[in-house]
Every structure is written in structure tokens, then in C-alpha cells.
Figure 1 (tube, rainbow, N blue to C red):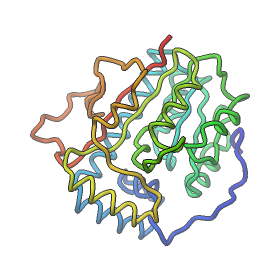
Figure 2: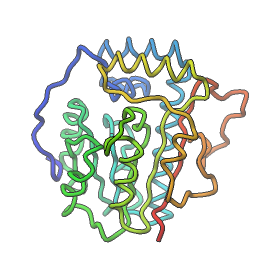
Figure 3: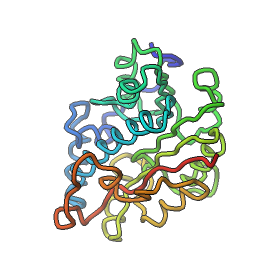
Length: 275
């Protein structure tokens, strides 16, 4: 059992789609059910580039973790809404560069937790928390002995904030980002991106579909200007700044404008807690 893991207390509901399982299907995985595949089909009718976006987002995650580990010397990662284990998970990428790297995975999807238990069973430098990512105080307390909170940490919010609805309290996505930023040591990093669209019909259509398909476990497709507010008071890594994630320090030449999705994109970047 991975460090800090607790027994699973809730069962897997196969009657409703799960954002984590849908993402798994879009990546070509097998840890999904018919209800997830049906929802993905409906999603791709509204936003045909959904599968392309999922894969480019995963590539971004690989790049940013590798760069933070190799160039910035980060050895501690806090992955919010980590999703189902797949090839090149955060701990695998980080530990290739820094064998002593520690990774905390935070998710409350029961299927994610079940697979994390199996995948991370022998890795003592990983921790799995069955928490809602909005429970920032609980996460901080639970990781107090596992992470060194006097040294820089990379907090990851990669393609998860669109799963959170807007609220008028501490559970609002922007409030969650502020809460985590206030806890992190100076010199830490925050990796933030989410699905955005300039097309109102795409924003409305996807949001309504996912709200219904996941039985309310969804937030909202937003606009780039809204995501930009998440980086208030952070030092944005520039270049490349806040961009479509395929343009964030790509390993190869990104596609030209004529071959890019026009329905929606994954948008964001990396911010540093001022030192």
C-alpha cells in the first residue's frame, strides 16, 4: 500500500459517466465502461478535437514535470485530480530525473483510487489521498510528514479545474488556487491549465452534456481570460507565458494554425510563488 493510503470507502458507480474514465478512453485506455464511451461519443459530436486535446494535454504534463525536475530542481509534486494511472505517470517522470522525488496524488474517484493502490503498491515515495482537491487544509495536514513544506513543491492542476463549478466560497476554483498558493513555500511552482473555448455554443454544449453525463460532477468550460485570473500574484514562466499547452515548450514543432482545433483548447501555463 502506498504511503498514506487509506482503505477505499465508496464504490464505483457504472450507471453514470466519470470524467476520469472518459479521459482514460480519450487517451486510448481500457479502464472505462460503456456509459463513459457513449458520453465520449456525444462529447466529440460537440467538440470533435476532444481526443486530440486529451493526448496533447498528456504530452504537456510529461514535459512540464520533466522540466520542473531537471531544470528547476523540483523533487516534490502535489498532483490534484490525478486521474487514472496511465503510461508515464507523474512519479515515473519525476523519479527518472530525480530518483528521490516524492509525489502525492489527490483524487476522490473510486476507480482512480483502486488502480492507484495497485500501481503504486511498491513505491514508497508516493502517497495517495482520497480527498476532494478543494479540501486544501486537509491535504496540507495529511502531507505534513510526507512532503517537506520548507522546500519548493510543484502543485499540479492539469486539466481538472473545468470539473469544478463556480461558487461563492472557498470551493470556487480561483479560491482553491489561492489557498494552495498561500500554503506553498517560496520558490514553489503551480502548473495550471483547463479546457477553454471562444465559442459560446461549445462552452454551453459541453458544460450541459458533462453536467448530465456525470450526474453533476462537473464545472464549466471557461474562457482564457478567466483562467488567466488563476495566475494573479504568481510569476508566470515567460517564455512561453500562458498559451495553448501544445505551445508550452514543445519537444517538436507544433502544428500550424491550419491544423489546430478551432472548437476548444487546453490553455494555461506555469506560475512561480515569488521568492
